[in-house]
Amino acid sequence: MEYRPFPSWPDVAPRLIAVAAGREAANTVIRGGIWVNVHSRETLHDHDIAIAAGRIAFVGPDASHCVGPDTKIIEARGRYMLPGLCDAHMHIESGMLTPAEFARAVIPHGTTSMFTDPHEIANVLGLDGVRMMHDEALMQPVNIFTQMPSCAPSAPGLETTGYEITAEDVAEAMNWPGIIGLGEMMNFPGVIHGDPKMLAEIAATQRAGKTVGGHYASPDLGPDFAAYVAGGPADDHEGTCEADAIARVRQGMRSMMRLGSAWFDVESQITAVTEKGLDPRNFILCTDDCHSGTLVNDGHMNRVVRHAIACGCDPLVALQMATINTATHFGLEREIGSITPGRRADVILSSDLAELPIEMVIARGQVVAEEGAIRVDCPHLNWPEAARNTVHLGHALTGADFEIKAPVGANRVQANVIGVVENQAPTKALKSELPIIGGLVEGEGEVCQIALVERHRATGGVTNAFVSGFGYQGNVAIASTVAHDSHHMIVVGTDRDQMALAANRLAEVGGGITIFRDGEELALVELPIAGLMSDSPATEVAAKAEQMVAAMQACGCQLNNAYMQHSLLALVVIPELRISDLGLVDVRTFEKIDLLEPLA
Image (tube, rainbow, N blue to C red):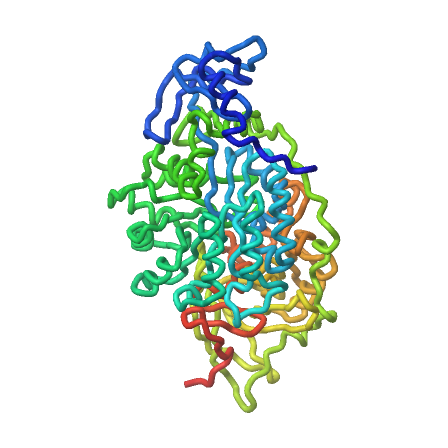
């Protein structure tokens, strides 16, 4: 399907003016609803909306002058008419779906605009992968704006990716039609220390008049934070407490508060508005990462807005944080984010502002969903074979590849261990005294093995370490080619032979997630596109993901959304301790550290 740009406001202004004045008839009129005005933060009863050329032409108490013999009438029947919801920061790949299937999943939940950073596929396929995501995004019946990835690798020198994104790549992408800005600048130490490559990417974005996304994953709010803000990032979603949110808005950033599948950072930050009384216009809601099960069963941005309201936020303020605040931040206030003349006709009908049931969704003037059912096609890109053949191990792995040899003559040893923190992206840097059996260091109690298996260049490399917090029992292993951000393969297990089985299985199917116990595969989620996504329907992927979650629980893991924790264990830009193909990384100092240390 060829991309056809949505007509610009100047292109259709004569028609909008004529409809608003009553000289021409609207295509559609929504009649008799409660207008949720996010500009004035008020609700206005008994109002109509006239739509023409996919945009809003008129909003007022009576749009009868806009009605002609062929005008479609939608009866609001006293329901709220609110703007389509915007997700300000997200990664489509985290849904395990392509842009088309992600759109199909979230449209019935009222999401009509997404700001997506495809840095996952950038690490696997480089600029070509970004272009594929960008192109399929533009084919959809809703607004999917792409942020050009900034950091592949996320931390140069601490990991090896399949491809690197350069400043020249960023400058080129700024000319693409769907690029809205620069994706999250995860290399915050690089910005703080004036790294020329990072600053060149930021400069290319600012010269294009576009927005630089932020990612400041440090609790230090002193001079380093000020240096990062001075470097140009305009928003940040890595805050986890009220002080983080306050510091960001005080320094002129937008504080993006996220509720994803595993990140619960709204409740701890929204008190900056609900209790401290800060101006809410610089606070924005987002998801960051949502897997397919969350999208199918719980919702998307409607879930985030409901959660914010449940945390004490005024419903109209929460809606502003998911509509006009987002649009304004990205320079799109005249295009999306409100129900006002000239804007794209993205409208939700709902009978309750607090519970937010999504009863009808209109995007660009077209009914795209009703009562939870999609009413439009979401076209697919023809993904090439190069995007489907991305798992290259070099050789079939055996249990020996996962051995951790002990120092000669030792009976026990102290190990640096990655500690998983439930519902948060950061980990803990732990130390555990572990036994040595047959010359090999073994996990004990809560501590089991983790390995990062190189999968981009068929080097055969395996980095072994230890992780705590999953609670696995018996002879089990879980492997995933979703391994933010380098996207090698992460394998966690209590048995080396099971770990080898799981890794080899993913090489066989072209990527995904699998769980083995005692030689039996308990669950498999195939992700054939870049080892990150499926182009199957979201309901099918979600069903397999539910089997995966059930299998993890059957193996003893009771963490909420444990798979999201698993997939982030290689993210070497979020403290405290991570694993990469180059070794164990202490993200507090951005230095590699030894796995084993002598006992004190």
